[in-house]
Every structure is written in structure tokens, then in C-alpha cells.
Amino acid sequence: MNFQGKVALVTGSTTGIGEAIAEQLHQHGAEVIIASRSLQKAQQKARSLSADGQTALGIGCDVSKPEQVCQLIHGSVSHFGRLDYAVNNAGTTGEHNKNVTEQTEDNWENVIANSLSSVFYCMKYEIPEMLKSGGGAIVNLSAVNGLVGIAGLAPYTAAKHGVIGLTKSAAIEFACKGVRVNAVAPGYVSTSRVNELPEEILKSFANSHPMARMARMDEVAEFVMFLLSEKASFCTGGIYPIDGGYLAR
Image 1 (cartoon, rainbow, N blue to C red):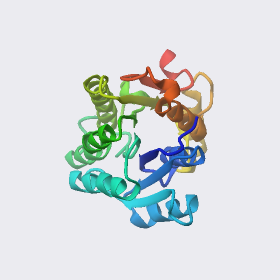
Image 2 (cartoon, rainbow, N blue to C red):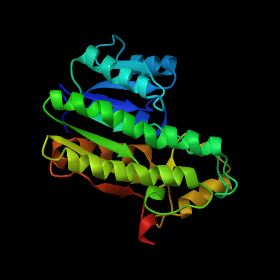
Image 3 (tube, helix red, strand yellow):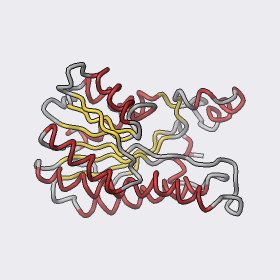
Image 4 (cartoon, rainbow, N blue to C red):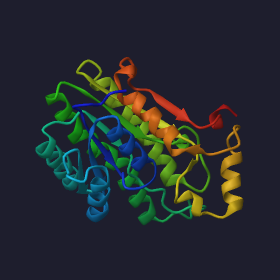
């Protein structure tokens, strides 16, 4: 997969899956925008990819704020001149192990703003710039609980279901205009943050997949790369599980 001469934006790309995706894109030739709530972390990650700043740019952005997302996209295009790809990865799970009656309004609003509204804001401003560049591709990060219910995470589950709806609608709207929109739905992924959890929880996460392990970050990143690439030129509106068989049960 060759991304030479292309510009890619990845939100939430200083840690975890987003970081792995940004690294893969850069390794395959793309000029990459690292977007994070922390400007310092975004700039630090960008410098680690491109010390001279020629092929990586770090921008601070709270994706729950539409005006900041607008500035993110305009700043990216101002710097690199175009936008070809976007991976809308940033989000938050919010509070765990609380049923619907125990969830607070504040937690609901925070999760929906960061994990659902953010994807809408990003696509709203990304797609017009892609159209100016002659087309492009977007991958939104959903999750297996965007396809099934998971107890104790109602706001996050609702947000990830919503990401799938947004993905399908946008895909249909721009299918004949050169912009493809897909979503991936990972199961539990072995990230540094997840690996800080107690051993018994990690085992339960692994064993929830028939393959009896969690996904590696590079496995998710490589599939996202495929969906962005021309190898997936007839793929749009799709929701692709990366779940070790989780949804097959």
C-alpha cells in the first residue's frame, strides 16, 4: 500500500490504536496530522515521526468542540495543501459498570460528545476538503459494542451504535462523489492503557474472544490501512469487525 503524496488525519493519535494507525500511514509514505487534546503530546509525536516537520504535523484539538474541529481541518489543509484520508478514532468510554439508572447525565453527555458528536463534526469538515482534492476515504472507529449491547457501558454502547449510523449515511451520501466512508468494530485491543488493568480482567477480555486473546494494535491498524487504500476501492458503508470471533457467538 503506497500513500506517497497523500495527506492523512488521525484523531486521538498520540496513544493506542490511533498512534499505531498514524505510524503505519507515515511508514507507507503519507504526510500525517497528529491530533490530540494535548498540543504538547501531538507535537511531540509528530516530531518523533518527522524531526524536521516536513511530513508530520501535531495539532491540539478537543474533538467534542465543533469550532476546534473546524480549526483542525483548516489548519491541516493550510499546512499540507490537501486532505485525502481521515481516521476518526478519538473517543472515551466513560464510567464503567453502571446500569442505565446509575449513569449520570454528565457522563452521558461527555461520552456522546467525545465518541459520537466528534465523529459528526470531523466528517462535516473533512469531507468538503476531500472533495476539493478529488476524493478520499474515511474510517471511523466503532467497536463490537456498536453492534451488540454491553451491560454497564450504555453511553459508550449508544455512541458506538451511532457511529455506525453516521458511517452508513455519509457513505451513501458521497458514494458517487469520490469519498468512501467505512467503520471498523474492534473487540478488546491490547493497548498500554488496557494492559494496566488487573490480570483477571485482562484474562476475561481475552477469553471473550473465541481466539482467546486480545487484538494487537498493529492488526487493527493494518486493516484500517487496507480500507483507506485503493485495494478497498469498492468498499463503502461497511462495518468491519476485528474481534477474534466475538460476534460469531
